[in-house]
Structures are given as structure tokens and as C-alpha cells.
Amino acid sequence: MSRTIITVVGKDTVGIIAKVCNYLASNNINICDITQTTMQGYFNMMMIVDTDQAVKSHEELARELTSVGHEIGVQIKAQKEEIFDMMHRI
Image 1 (spheres, rainbow, N blue to C red):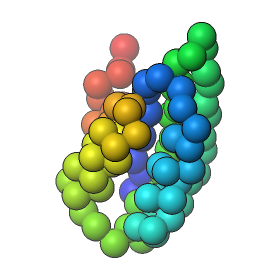
Image 2: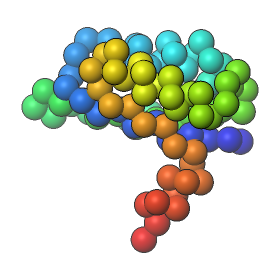
Image 3: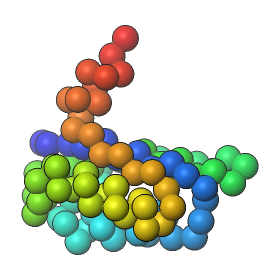
Image 4: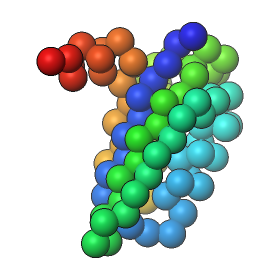
């Protein structure tokens, strides 16, 4: 399974989860796990998604998710799981 870690951070507004999830669904990406929290008006979400059936390359997805983030006023990062693991290894 090809997995990607998606993080979303920014000021909390209505529709952040909906916008990100609609983008993922329209690109045939399945959500494996998701967690989100809001603290004092700030939104933080982390998702693990399965990109095996994705209709676009990882680079396209990452670029487009960054654009979605700009549209809704949050920062969205998408990293392949193996790169994320290497960056956060102790």
C-alpha cells in the first residue's frame, strides 16, 4: 500500500475537513486514519491516506493540496510515508 501523510494547520474555519476530504475523494484517495483538534481557534489535522488508486502522481497531489490550503487559509503538506518516517526518526 502506498501511503501519504497529510497535515493541515491553520486558523479554524468552517469547512476545512470537508474541502480536504472532497479533494481526496475526487482523486480516488482513501483515508486510512484521521485525527484533528482545535485549540484556542487553531485547527490541526493529520491524515494517513492510501494513494494506490490515486488518479494523479504524488507531486501533483502535493501541489494541488497546497493550493487547496491557500484557498481556505491553512497550510497543507503531503509527504510520502517513507519520507515522513525518515524525517521523524529518532
